[in-house]
Amino acid sequence: DVSIALFTADLRLRDNPVLRGALRSARRVVPLFVVDRGIAARGFAVPNRAAFLADALAELDEALRKRGGRLVVRHGDVVDETAAVAAETGAGEVHLAAGVSAYADRRERRLRAALEQDGRALTVHDAVLTVVPPGALTPAGKDHFAVFTPYFRRWEGESPRRPGPAPREVPVPEDVRSEPPPEAAALASGEPSPGLPRGGEATGQRRLAAWLRTGLEGYARDSDDLAGDSTSRLSPYLHFGCLSPTEVVHRARERGGAGTDAFVRQLAWRDFHHQVLAARPAAGHRDYRGHDDRWRKDRAAFDAWREGRTGYPVVDAAMRQLLHEGWMHNRARLLVASFLTKTLYLDWRAGARHFLALLVDGDMANNQLNWQWAAGTGTDTRPNRVLNPLSQARRFDPRGDYVRRWVPELADIPGRAVHRPWRLPEGQRPADYPPPMVDLTAGAERFRDARA
Ligand code: FAD
Image 1 (cartoon, rainbow, N blue to C red):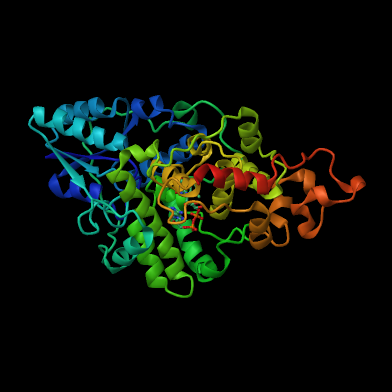
Image 2: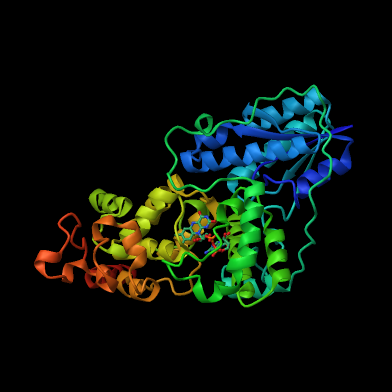
């Protein structure tokens, strides 16, 4: 009469089919989280996501305790530990969310084999990490959509389930051994970024409520304004599953108003990239479409980009926001990715790796496939367009406030002159800010020649 709900990227009680399935199948449930050695070994346990994860696990434990239960935490190999807990408790079933990455796939296969050997069952739940499960929508004769617009048309026509409430009670067997929810320092070494948000379901719910109340309405108009910072910032809560994407879509539609369609469309982008990665796991590290790019190797140029010293203020502001907050505005992500891959002609994989080392919302589907999109090796239908950081700055940071916020060397330059400090009269140029590291026209030509 025991089953296991194995939490992965669904660290919530509300609208969680995994937990609900486990509760339905047995009288008592072990809500299990395994601090997975495999994830650390693959370099995914970085300080920013570790800190957010530690918050999320603490909030999950607290919420379970309010319902008469607790979170059971183990450390080690996720398959071995889950099988061991199943053996210790006599659990007949393990419930798990369907994943999309090659890693999640292997975990699922190994876990099924280990459990079945002992006469136990694995139940995998769809539509936990995404609104529409990867593979549910396909164009005729293909296994996934390679273009967003037709995907979105079909996605919009789907009717996702009504999100479910959190269970009132979660009865957990008393004698299961558990370690306390881990501190961030036990999950990764190194300091998290100073401006990191707090993780967890309750925190995410408060953010969602505030966003629906005050942010959503203006989303279509303001979402690209770098200084206005008027996007939802829900991405890390979605990444760790502190919020259910189905619930977010449902609540946004219920709220309605001007910004709803544009916001819901972004959540469809999230599903879109997940279905690409699920169908093409290799796209996590290999070009999605063949391009024969012979990316340059230039360590000094890469370091200047990474540290926010390119001499292009809007690029540098964005890279420093990433270092400080573990997060970056979507428009800024697009323009720094275009700058690295197209203007500097450096490999998207190096940029994606740097993002994954810092992003609190960093994940394989969204990060790798957005990088491929920006590099023109992925699903962009205009793969050879180059974003010019100066025109991007003029459009999306028209007063220069975003740059002044993140680049203190330029904080005294008023108005949009801040975007071209090299144009200032000699005596007014900040001595501690570098000149532009590359000529934009030459960079764009090099790229176009390479792709011709
Ligand atoms: P909002 O604008 O409020 O959007 C709401 C939600 O929609 C987001 O929380 C996110 O879940 C989803 N979303 C929005 N834009 C996209 C998009 N282009 N692709 C997929 N989902 C989207 N997003 C990640 O979650 N993790 C990543 O690792 C990641 N890496 C990126 C790398 C690059 C180079 C680029 C260009 C984009 C990347 N994105 C990534 C997508 C996007 O930038 C972030 O999701 C967004 O900035 C998060 O901020 P927000 O929650 O305020 O977004």
